[in-house]
Image 1 (cartoon, rainbow, N blue to C red):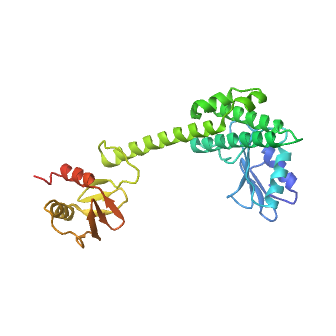
Image 2 (cartoon, rainbow, N blue to C red; image 1 turned 30 degrees about the horizontal axis):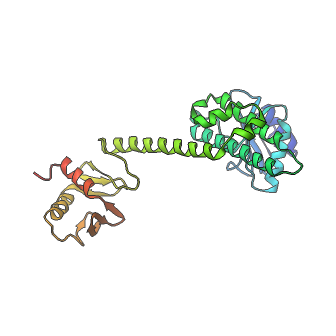
Image 3 (cartoon, helix red, strand yellow; image 1 turned 180 degrees about the vertical axis):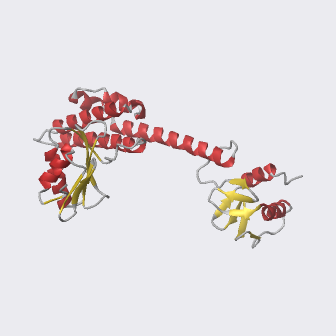
Length: 286
């Protein structure tokens, strides 16, 4: 089977039709493997055909050079008869693509906002076509992957709009962004709390930047992956409790720097309440 071709157009059409599994040009800077076609290397996917439907293609909205832009135009010409979604993340055939879906949704929203602003400031040219195209792609994208649940309430309201003039009048993109940030912050905090509970083996409130401790075998491990022997940690704790000087105290591979509210050891700042919690768990006060 022939794999090296001189014509980029031919390579693009072979990929678009999936006539064979792979092909490249002689310079090896334009090639495809399976459903994905690349420019200069696997680091830049120009486009990927949807595994469940060869008539659907995800095209990379990014570009990095004039040559790559030329490659992209060649590919777009070869798929002008297919349904195209232009997104920054095209690797969407994997089973778990939630993060990519969210990033692509945010991309469409930013493009709609960008073209609305350009339309408002334009004297002659109308950007309604670009606005409608991005809105239609966003609606189709969400429907294709059945990911409406990933949208905030404000984004769902935007998705229900079909009239472009209504979009101009009623869409507050500042509010949409704020709702997205609030939603993502809440989900991230919930995830971090779940991870902390699993890591410590108990339910304690998560606080950003705080160093947490857990018992691991004969050591105490920090949430920053440092380990010290339990025996030495107990000696240090009891010295702190009795008011003895601990500056310079050696514990494992580390040296105590200070105790000024928090215990400073190397790059760690460990709060009193976290020391007391682990001491209680290990029954050091009895």
